[in-house]
Amino acid sequence: MFVDHVKMTIESGKGGDGMSAFRREKYVPKGGPSGGDGGRGGHVYFEGDEGLSTLLELHYDRHRKAEDGGRGENKKKHGKDGGDLVLKVPLGTTVFSEETGKVLADITRDGQRARLLEGGRGGRGNARFASGRRPAPTFAEKGEPGKTLAIRVELKLLADVGLVGLPSVGKSTLISTISASKPKIAAYPFTTLTPNLGVVDADEAGSFVVADLPGLIEGASEGKGLGHQFLRHVERTRLLLHVIDISAIEGRDPYEDFQSLNKELKSYGAGLEKRPQIVVANKMDAPDAEANLERFKEKVPAEVEIVPISAYTRWNLDRLMKRTAERLAELKATPLYEEDAYEETVVYRYEGEAEPFTIERAEDGVLEVKGERVERLFAMTDFNNDEAVWRFARALRAMGVEKELRKLGVKTGGTVRILGYEFELKE
Image (cartoon, rainbow, N blue to C red; front, top):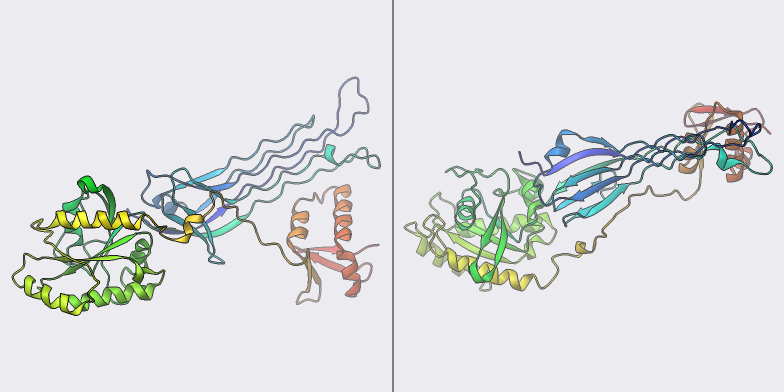
């Protein structure tokens, strides 16, 4: 089963909780705090694997989570870091943020890793909070929560050459004769429902990878038929072999087919209409093929390169392969696209807000304090411990939350809400 498009959710691991503990050795009657820090939560990575050719594994498990960090231990022992989640994908995989549409990673090399989410920080143990003013703190931090991200994963085949054309023009027959690829072939439209890859050996000219892509129909650039599922794979090819049925046996005009496909390439965007092409006039073994070819040449621009062949009888295939290899050698001297500059590692971070917190009035009139810093502090506070609660209150005061609430008219004893929990404002 070929899968080239998956929507899924990934989640990094939660940091382990810090520990609150004290030394209790026989000869240390008043031992100090000795609680260790929690371990870091696991990161989430995508890694290129040249042995894969489909996103099938992601398709069947669409929510993946890294391991949580371990809890801190006594004697200031650090908790175990959570195991990272490494999702292996085929080369040519692009990862997008489902919310913003931004490209988060572009995997084009074997072993290339992109870190999409960082694991939560481990909570600090009570030994980290000891000071001259507070020599024996009884509280520890909870681990920082992991992050969750909805993503769209797309596979764009990495091939040097793309075979494009309308249904039943002979693309599958062509790739089966020039390479070891053995696609299913039959005499009806849309035989090819998934891309087929083949490696072509052009003797002294070298070898190259060809992708036989599903046939186009009018409106494919708008998603009709196989639509974007087809056109997405064209983006990474350097050269297009535009196969047309020059025999016109099925009553279609070769020139109209040529115009129709180029129109769809242009409508899709991504500069596909500017991609170099060789027009492959297939089925030259048909009775009227020669006359049709002459009429076709009169209509197309003079700079269009045309190579007539018969994939069925293998006539002129050597010339086509040699010319394809020559064009590729010329094209490989220049970068295919600017995206080649993607960094080896891409770390996704939530964009920080302009202010450390915001205050909004809910429908019931209660003021709600929001903000990434406030919410992180809330999640890492143990509200069952009075010392931890007072530390939380002091941290909010240091941020300026209390001062802003006073400006908005909240009196002592008034109610304030944070993440659905209500607090009473005190002096």
